[in-house]
Amino acid sequence: MRLDFFLTRFARATVFCAVLSAPAAWAEPSHGIAMYGEPQLPPDFVSLPYAYPDAPKGGRIVTGEVGSFDSLNPHIRKGSVPWQLRFLAYESLMGRNWDEPFALYGVLAETIEVGPNREWVEFTLRPEARFSDGSPVTVEDVMWSYETLGTEGHPRYASLWSKIGSMEQTGERSIRFEFNTEDRELALLVGMRPILKKAQWEGRDFTDSGFDVIPISSAPYVIDDFEAGRFVSLRRNPDYWGDGVVPFMRGQANLDEIRMEFYGDGTAQFEAFKAGALTSNREFNVEKWETQYDFPAIDRGDVVKSIIPHQRPSGMTGFVMNTRRDVFKDWRVRDAMLHAFNFEYINEAMTGSRQPRITSYFSNSVLSMADGPAEGMVRDFLEPFADDLLPGALEGYSLPESDGTLRNRANIARATELMAEAGWTVQDGTMKNAEGEPFTFEIVLKQGSSENEAIIDLFTAALERLGIQPTVTTIDSAQYAERETNYDFDMTYYRRGLSLSPGNEQRLYWGCDGVEAPGTRNYMGVCSPAAEAMIDRLLNSESRDEFLAATRALDRVLTSGRYVIPIYQWNISRIAHVKELKYPDTLPIYGDWIGWQPDVWWYEEE
Image (cartoon, rainbow, N blue to C red; front, side, top):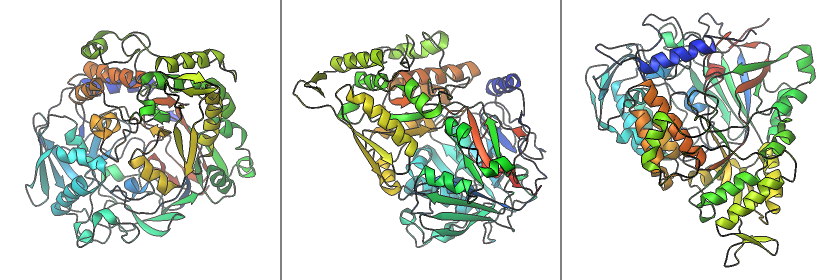
């Protein structure tokens, strides 16, 4: 299909700037809300700009996942859950438009109203809103959902709940939240929590559910069938309350069935796709995309290869070092690992050097730190923390580059120097400290991650030249989830997607509270006063310039912290799918992001 951007890159950048710089003013209940200024879509919008409102209904999509699952409740800490359920099986008061940096429009909520400084927010529910069993969605359900998730649910919900000073019903269908913290983003975040049916959980332990509870929700899809660890099938509810009611949902939820199949490893998943058991497959390895997608279904035209560009940040993908462990507390040791990791050689081996490397957490976007020394407002923000910042934050930092050869002589030599500065030297062929204790650490990987295993094999071979022999442990999905939750690893694979509108989730990713509290996304255990201050600034910025400077400063702090060994970035998405699965020509600025597939896709026989 023809791939057009909704706006040109220049036009999108202009819109982004305008959204950030426009003053906020809310006098009356509105159909939507933006982080800065007013939402782009008018009250009478027909559909999201990247949805096809006249898309036909029917058909199915079958995707593959590597791993397993032992729960259907995505809202608690316990268990391993298909990640899609959190987004497909539940609805929230407001929905995200992925063609704006951060804007929400009503779904369960008919209107939203905020205080002059966003110190409170009030929602009015749509009278038509119903759960899949036909019962109405009530204010009582909303209030119960927020309190239960905030006090008993997954840790990702706790931070917002702690900032809600009060919650009260203000009318038959309206509810108001007042905040105890000055934070402009809270009014938006409150609108994005899943709404559960209170009556379904009466007499049950919300924190201990697995397969015994099939959730009743207001979403277009309900769980129709599943087999533990093997597959989950969701069916479109023919009586979905939002059809013809909610503009946000027009052109979405077009497929009759969404099925997720689970496999032991990536090879088995790819073979299943080639055999026709799957109808869509995302490919993250460009070398494989170029050389192995030549099977008969491709040649016949029954399977189509689609390229989906985007303008969102690269995020961070690679191997994270856990600074809670003594082995990685010293930044010089982490820097040595970065030098020993021969990215140029690994990239050639894995992708034929076809994929660029991630250079910072917000690379590939306007939020990325600039090359060279910090200047202007970015320097002003960082200067008060100069004594605590690591080398490179103010002066400028870039990842080490090798000459692309296997030996990687210069970087191995530099790694040896860094280890010596940290108190580790090669003694009788082994890296040891002054007490003669060997330097070693454990790399934890999930079963089935064959690509990660191949990369780590190349990395460990390089470490042997430093006299370092790490232990590589491969475990199943359930064990891996448990160890991730409790930060029980020295090094592990790490992937963190970042948006064009970073906000409170940044605390969950790298806030000091996550060093001890289990279940956060702060896998590296970072606790940086500078990072905390930059998060505060970006959350309360009142201008575009201040927001951009705070985010770019945060990018410098994190990147120069040397917490992750970055690998290649995916600045485009590669999706192979059967020809009957189609998507609109208009693409959102976020591209292939959360829910774009399958939300706006449809099935159409040619």
